[in-house]
Length: 243
Image (cartoon, rainbow, N blue to C red):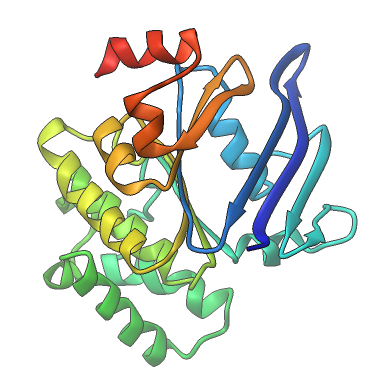
């Protein structure tokens, strides 16, 4: 199967500090990839380069076989294909839960408000928050806010979902409810790239797991094999600290 998203020799520096060093990665439609690694290894920068929140220094990003560049493409339109869920929820505090979800479909995609609302209510049902539609974000727990953020990303009907450590800001007892929603999304065939510290989730849900270290993908493989039999000494040392 051809790759839906393909990255070749991706490089990114901040000032004199190289953060991504020649990353190669191919993602097939419907595939779930988890990216693990220590803080500062380049995981979040990789995600942000994928949807042009950060501009790469060099390298190639292909989507459906087409090279995407800021000089030749409308990156705002390209970003609509990629839903992104951040560590911190970035909900609009002055809008209700429902208002947060329909804002982009109505104003960016120009959908009728009635249609966007109907779809938003279905998504809230899916993430277990239908009864919170008229509530404001300040009344929600962290786990509920993150589930709303996931529903908001899905409302744009993306082809790929990017998750940047979506549970790391949550209290431990709230992590499970967010992971359950992500597991459901994966089971429906959504293409996903997830930066995470949740190793059990990666082992169970991801088709492949990548270990990043110092700006490179040091090891990757099918998740069950990756966790059962890591090859690289640094991967073994990393996993031994957290498993």
